[in-house]
Structures are given as C-alpha cells and as structure tokens.
Image (cartoon, rainbow, N blue to C red; front, side, top):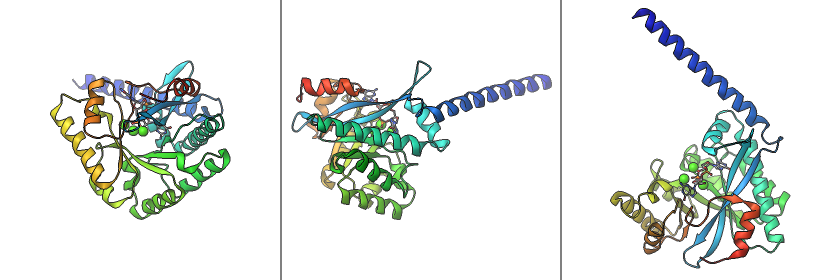
Length: 277
Ligand code: C2E
Ligand code: CA
Ligand code: CA
Ligand code: CA
C-alpha cells in the first residue's frame, strides 16, 4: 500500500507538472497573440423588442492560435491571472471603437457597441484608457456601452462610484453583465447608478418550462422596471423564450435565435439585409 501511495503521488506530481507546463505554454502564446495578429473581434446583434430593430451589438473576443480556436472562457481567466488583461482589454477597446467609427463613416447605423470589461480592468486608470480609445478612433462616447460584472463593482465602493460617475458624465452607458449569478445583486442596483441589466443566459436557458427560471426572470424584469433600468436577455435560442421575454416586458434580446457572434464583414451584411425582426 505504501509503494502504491508513492506511485500515486508520482503520478499526481507528473500530472501537475504537465498541467503547469501546458499553462506556461499557453501563457507565452497569449503574451504574443496581439503582435502576431491572432485576435479577432466578433459581433453579436442585440435587438430592441420595442422598436423591432437592432439596438446594438456585443463585441466578443476570439483567439485563433495554431489553427485552433481557443474560447474566451479559457484564455480570459488566464489573462486575468497573468496580468495580461489590461493590454488585451485595451486592444479590444480600441479595435471595437475603431470598428464602430468605421461603421458610422460608412453610414451603417449601430446605436451602441457593447464591450466586455474584466473586473481586473475596472481600476482608476481605466477611464483614461476608454477616453483615449474614443479620442483615437473618433467613436462617440454615447454609443459606447461597457458590460461590467458585479465583481468589478465589488472591490472598492468609493472608487467604483467615481468611475461610474465619470462614465455617466461622458455619456458612456454601463450594463451589469451576468446579472443574477453573483452576490447581493440588489444592493448594487441601489448603490450604483447603472443603465442596463443583462440577464444571464443561465436563467434564459430554462424558459419557458422551468418554474424557478421563469420566476427569477420575471422578478428581475420587474425590479429593473421599478428602478428605471433598461433590460436585455442573453442566450435567447427559441421562439418560446422570445415570447416569454416579450410578454414580461424585456426591452432587448440577444442570442443564437437571431445570430451567433460573427465577424465584422458578416455583421455589415446582416445590418444591410434588414434592420427589422
Ligand atoms: P458573456 O459576456 O456572458 O458573453 C455571452 C456568451 O454567450 C458569449 O460566449 C456568446 O457567444 C454566448 N452566447 C450568445 N448567445 C448565445 C446563445 O443563444 N446560446 C449560447 N449557448 N451561447 C450564447 P463567448 O463569446 O464564448 O464568451 C464567453 C465569455 O468570455 C463572455 O461571457 C465574457 O465573459 C468573456 N469575454 C468574451 N470577450 C471578452 C472581452 O473582449 N473581454 C473580456 N474581459 N471578456 C470577454
Ligand atoms: Ca457580456
Ligand atoms: Ca453571461
Ligand atoms: Ca461573463
């Protein structure tokens, strides 16, 4: 038993080393991804259920490395742990704003461009980074939306308040992403002035059959309405989900039912093909 224990330990140790090595390889690859041009932005349309038009798009980062697609759920956490997220986040901001400005100059009307912001980015210097991206690209502040998570707001209430006030003053909208999945959600709604609530896909998945998901989604929409917050549901895949959200007064929707995230050129075709749903 003793020697078997040692073997298990060895095995475990080797596994650990393999994992650590793989991680290091990926970290190094990620470090070079920007200069090697391996990142691309995809865009997923968001639809307004009131006007039946495209209300904007969410920008989603894609990493193509060695002919492989590495999902953001894998590399974003790694970027956060290794301190690479500020430079990657800056690249996303500048490219996203640049694309938005190009669309405007081509006469393509995208009301808002929504960019995901990591909690690790939501620091003091972040406002300046956003401001620089807008200046550099000429993209108007009032068309930019930042999708932040509760963990971004959690760290330091005073600092967060200052940042949010600065963004509000410049016309940049703030959307609370993954809503309902974090902690003490309602406290944040009261404390901070936000523009939009984004209901997480986890709740939309169960519509319209799961009683709990129905109750949670309906409650979130109700609270948002009372607080004067705009709403958007992500991960809408079926007509039934759409019907439920429309019946309960959700303002905007996004999901595979309408379109997957697509490259900029495809997004332009989609916009030109129809502005209606
Ligand atoms: P998220 O912000 O919650 O983004 C929504 C995710 O749901 C995206 O996955 C999107 O492609 C996917 N999705 C959209 N509609 C549907 C649907 O109808 N069904 C299903 N099953 N999925 C749908 P993606 O692109 O893999 O991104 C995963 C996460 O990675 C994002 O979650 C976000 O947290 C993060 N992420 C992506 N791009 C960026 C970025 O530029 N910066 C940062 N900080 N995070 C990013
Ligand atoms: Ca998001
Ligand atoms: Ca989500
Ligand atoms: Ca997320």
